[in-house]
Length: 122
Image 1 (cartoon, rainbow, N blue to C red):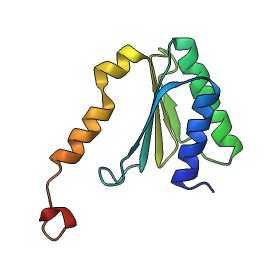
Image 2 (image 1 turned 180 degrees about the vertical axis):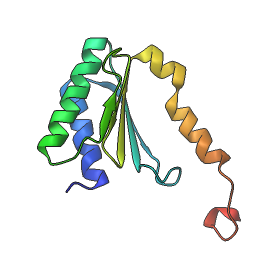
Image 3 (image 1 turned 120 degrees about the vertical axis):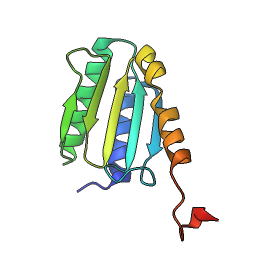
Image 4 (image 1 turned 135 degrees about the horizontal axis):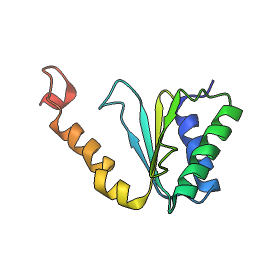
């Protein structure tokens, strides 16, 4: 069974195999209890988004990871792969710029209320 770090490294390697660009990893453990990590990568065409997604799913299955779900192959503009604690977003640049997940998740962290007794509450 792969842990989050091993899955993330395997995802990055699979993305690099098919020449993904602008690969970003966001640690979401402090922001969400649904998943631990988000990997975002850009692809230059629908064909490349599909090739990247296929490669990620094949490589992770070979390592024994479960692909919980995947969506977006029909349009190929944004493909989401759910690997349980790791989410993978493969997006064409215009879609990535529009949704700007990196900024969205940074703002989510900054807007989170400080709980009394938490280390951040001071």
